[in-house]
Image (cartoon, rainbow, N blue to C red; front, side):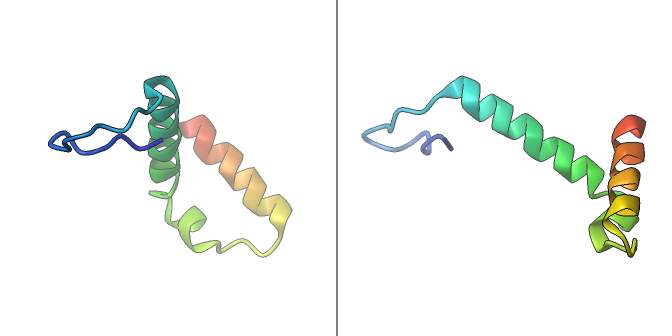
Length: 60
């Protein structure tokens, strides 16, 4: 789904709508990883990790 370079002689077709959605999701994950606690997984249980993901997502 990643588009080809602009200077390619024979452009490869791609779906621009799917690429835009993929880009939005990647940016969301990048913002969530700004929380050091999420990026390094300090929480011991999966329930507390998921809870902090919910808090960080609500903060966005």
